[in-house]
Image (spheres, rainbow, N blue to C red):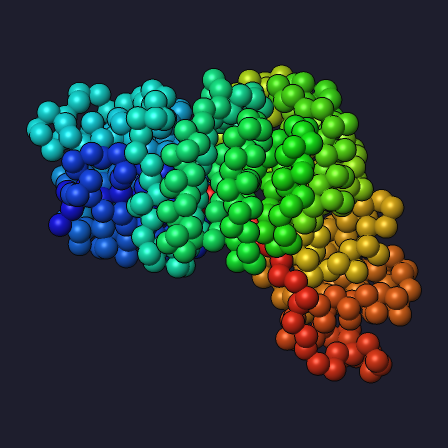
Length: 504
C-alpha cells in the first residue's frame, strides 16, 4: 500500500491533472511509495473517501481549484471524521492565497502555496521521518525548472488511451492582467526546449495525438514556439490535435507561416482578447494593441485552418453594458469560430481586488466568485449577461446553428442576441436542460414571430442546420411544415467540431 496518495477531483473524467503528476515525478526516492487516485466532482464524497482509504495512505495530497473546492471540502471533512490520523496536505491555486479565510484549510494538516514539487517532497519526507514542520502553511519558492523531473512518464497507458494529455513548455507570464493569477508572476520561464521535445517524442511514440498546452503565452518566445511547431509539423496527420493559448497582438511573419502550414482539424488557438476598451485595459493593467489584435485575428481566420477560440470578459471594472456590446460586435465582425463570453471572477490572490471599492465591485461569496454588481452594471444586468453567455454557447458557439446564426445576428449582433436571450428566458425560465430539437423550435419561433423574418427563409436555414448537425430528433417546426424542408434522412455532420476543454 502506498504511503502517499496524490488526488484531486477533476471537472470531467476526460481530464487529467498535470499538477499531480508534477508532484509525483519529483518525489525522489518516495516516488515508489506513492500513487495517483483521480476522481471527478460528480463522484459522491463517500465513494471517493472509500477508495482513498482502501489504499491506506499516511499522507493524502489534494489539488484544490475554484471548480472543486466545495466538493473537496466535503471530502476532507468526511475523511477526517472517519480517519482523523490521516495527514491531509492541500495545494493548488485556490488555497495558495487568502488561505486563512477558507473553511477547507481549517480541516487540513498542511497547506502548500505556489508550485509545490520541491516543498511537497520535502514535507512528505519530514512527516515520514517523524520530523514534521511546526507551521501549517508552507510557501513554495519558484523552482529551477532545469532541476525538476518532467512529469510525462507519469501518464499511464489508460490516460493516453482515454483522456486528455496536458503539457507545458513554460511557466509563468510576463503580463500583469489583474483578473489573472499569472499577474503575480515575475516573468515567463521556459523548460529547456530539447528536453521538453524529447519528452513530447516519447509521448507521441506511446500514442498521444492530442496535446493540450497550458502555457499562458505560448507565442512569447518566437524562436521556441517555432521549434515546437516544427516538431509537430513533422508529425502532422489527421489524428494530431494541438491546443495553444496565444497572445493576439504578437504574431510575426515567421510564426504566421508556420501556423498556416498545419492541416485542417489539427490546431486550436485560444486567444484572450477580454476587452477592446482602452480605458478598461489600462485600469486592469492589460497591455494590448487592439489594431494588431484585429489584424492578426483576421489574418488567422483567412489564411490558416486553425480553430479560433476567442475569450471576452463581461463585468470588468468600469466597463458598461454598451462598452461590452461594442467589443462583442467587433469580435463578431472578425468571425472567429467561437467567442467564449466569460463573467469576471475574483480569483483568490488576483490583483483585481484593488478595484473592489473604487468601482463598486461585489462578488459571489461562493465559487466561482463571479461578479454580481459593479458601479456601472447592476445585479439584473449581470444576470442578463450570464444568460447571454449560456445561450451564446448553446447557439452561437455550438456549430449547430451556422445558417440561423447569420439571420439571428444580422448587423446588430449583441443587441439581437440579447433580445433573443431575454425572450428565451421569459419563454422557458431556464438556461439548462433545453433539448436541441426544442432549441431549434425556439429560434424559429423568435425569428418568425418576434423578428418578423421570412418564414420560408428561416425554415430553409433551419433545415440545413439540422441536416448538418446529425441530430436524430427533428424539430417540430420542420415536421409541421409538410414541405420539402421536412427532413427525409439523417446525415452526419460534414466536419467535426473541435471541442473546447477546461483544465482538469
